[in-house]
Image (cartoon, rainbow, N blue to C red; front, side, top):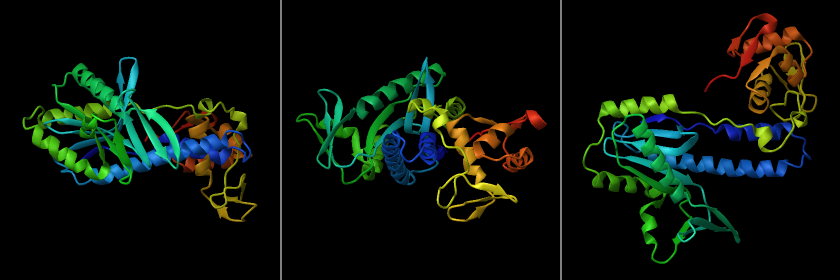
Length: 321
């Protein structure tokens, strides 16, 4: 059973919003596009992993995706974790294509793809560290000790996996996505005793959800972009041109001539992603390039956003996911 489901990462939504609102000739566009492609590749790899997880017994396995927990002053994030009465399993998914080489001398991964070689942080070390952090977290919250295993899952079935001579033991911890269920079967045969009961798993599940802390990112600061560089206006849902013009209760595109009654919704979402998680009538009019305070009030009200204050002091807030 998936207790916490994987959602589209907020940073992907932020990057998409940035690309909608940066000038075509902006010097950061190429870097942002490259980062977006990498993030999307990782997200798609995780979704391929989710396909295989869907075959697990829902009664036996509790699945948590994109879980971020506090560990002292810091946080640790786990792509996917499975909890059973007998063991827990942390899964670190990698969407690497080509040939990957696990260098166990320097604990890094070298990837060769399209005649280009790149180095990456060793995901085995990363997953091992997550195990230590999770053990400490469970202990700190009063839960009984449970064996915690980890695996690095390569989502591309065509990826060639190599390592140094004499280091073949890493293949006990690394597998392609299509072999994941076999890996889990092996763990089920190895761990026979129950370390947790159903009630304890339920309590762990509730505590995971309660203690999960979503990652907050200031995307403009990350790319050293000033708010004044962000293009305002409502983008056309068909041709992406902006700004659309608001007349007679609809948004009109001067480029492709379509009309929309709801095009402002994406613009407000962009504002929440890029500027701040709260918006006033004045902010709305400035960012969406609309002059009427009454039209702005009607459009904001139609979105059913949570808010505080009344009338001209009303502040609308980004909905909680």
